Image (tube, rainbow, N blue to C red; front, side):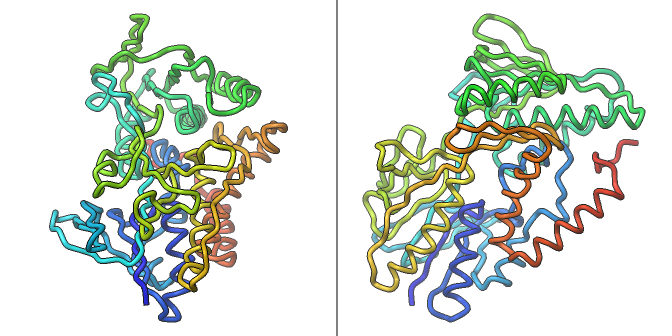
Length: 410
């Protein structure tokens, strides 16, 4: 009997323990353990909805404690603090700061990535981030008073990747909806991007359609604008321009947590991603695997897997199958990422997507439904289609009875 420890309960980690728990633990074949400091799982591509006050915690959040019971894996609410490869153990720290040791036969690291401030002066002190549900909730607690205030308020968002674009559009939509309730709040949103276009990692034609939609929503988009430093209530650009705001959020670039670079000699790159081979094994230890944004995984074309949600989901499914092969004495197959395209939500009822290797660009409410379907597919892995169908019905009923903006605006 082997013990599989998975560190990180994001999309990749939670899908992995769900599959392994159903396959192994119910039969008593192997033990599956999830180490995660948070109490609830939130799908990371929807963190911008938490910050904007439009996320439904009752229907879309997942309790690790309840989910672990239903899927027969063990949930340990703690964070990873250190690694001892010789003893095959990790040191974990609980919410009280107490340290303990957890042994493993196979270890999977799936802790994801965080925003990269590129060591820009003042960013960590004067900007908010959206790397976790807690940070998104903290952002909401500061955005909510701005939405309630009379007159115009300003929010600056740095980084026009998927997170920055979706947050800007969602906030613009919320501000527009509030005006329908005869509310006097007027939110001005500025989106700042160092590249020459929004969504610099996506196809140019998709970027243009997203830009057009943002402008229609009233978002002030500033491309070719690099932030030199952040101060309280303002951003200073390389050109010396000053962008004032009541609130500043940073959503530019990604990197992994620094502690990954000091894990008992495991190889990392300049972004602190752990280097793995084509089977998702770390280059220096065959009993340690890495999936999701925290892995630098090579591909047959000489490139690496891009840090995207769909890549993390595919890696989780692949590794679940390969661990079964490994435990049955079979060789592991390489992970090859199949790019299914990109879908970006631009407001609550509109999205833009690129499909068929960027040969087809689609947009509209139908594409927004496709965006929601991707989330439902993630839920299907966690719960099965029966519960997902019930969640969809409940959400539609709830939406028909409640306003779009679900928080108190009095």
